[in-house]
Amino acid sequence: MKYAIIKICGKQYKVSEGEEILVEKLEAEKGKAVVFDEVLLLANEKTLKIGQPLVEKAKVKAKVLEQVKGEKIRVAKFRSKSKYRKVKGHRQRLTKIKIEKIYG
Image 1: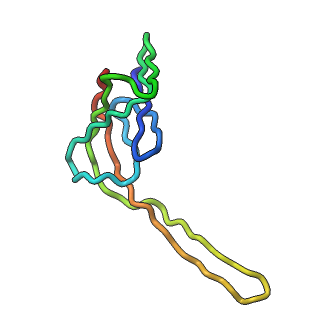
Image 2: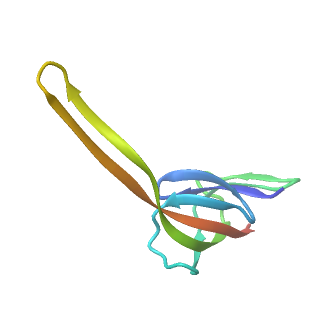
Image 3: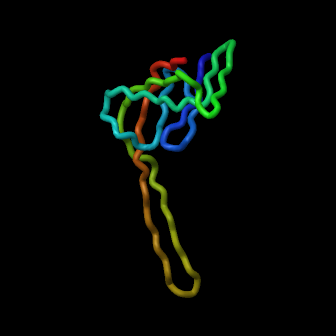
């Protein structure tokens, strides 16, 4: 099983070929291909390459499936004995991608 650990928008994801993951919003249109070259670790059945900090000549190619919104997060502020209550909501914008190929 071939997998890689890549860095996207400051977060690290363990990915393998054919996998679909949600990442923070990428500026790419639906159906377009994106290439991630910040590969921190690359592994297959026999070898393991650990980057210092990145693995040289390693890339991960992915396809953008859709732009979605995440679940709603509610943030509540409350102070006792003062009738102070505030509730705010937030939905993070996400991009669903499918990992097509791991090079390296």
